[in-house]
Length: 264
Image 1 (tube, rainbow, N blue to C red):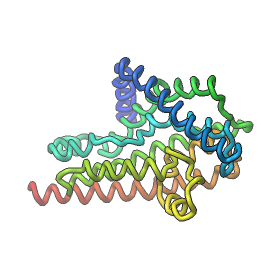
Image 2: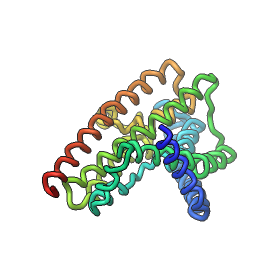
Image 3: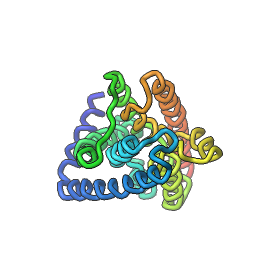
């Protein structure tokens, strides 16, 4: 565990050195948040002030919590592992005395911790000053919200790793990554709440892990769901962690075997 803590700490320190990029990210995130908020508020206004359980304040809260989670969850994914597989550097990673997925997860947690503090919370605070945000009335909701965020980061990490691990069998993964990002951004609820979907699309979304990445932590942190209503959704997050972790491990083992057979 000490090795993983050191990897997480090193990742946090590494990203804390990108000061200009961080400032640019805060600015971009804030502007994009205002654009999203204006669109969602216009939609609610045209619907008479309420749309599928969301009023103006709840919609603004949804936007700013989504902007806060955008960077730490990394809805646009990463390609680091896929590149290391393509270049053969993964062979070195497999020789290290730490689990391959474990070391990438530790680095993800360190990176996500910094991105949440430096690029996630500032835009949310700016948005709260301009539009206001709704906060839970029950203290337990904050604990559940923190758990939902950690589980969301984990679910997103595992799904992204599976896309990267496809590089063991694909010459180029950029097409797969593009499709994954498009589907994830839609079905996770990042663009709009999934309860605004037509019934057929809502059913599809709920059958995937994507709502666990964005919709669940937002609903939990915003207090839109009571703790009792949020607990089953957090249970779904845990279930997806187990399923995706098992699938990622199986993909890694199969990929390593394919490399050993082809490369000797």
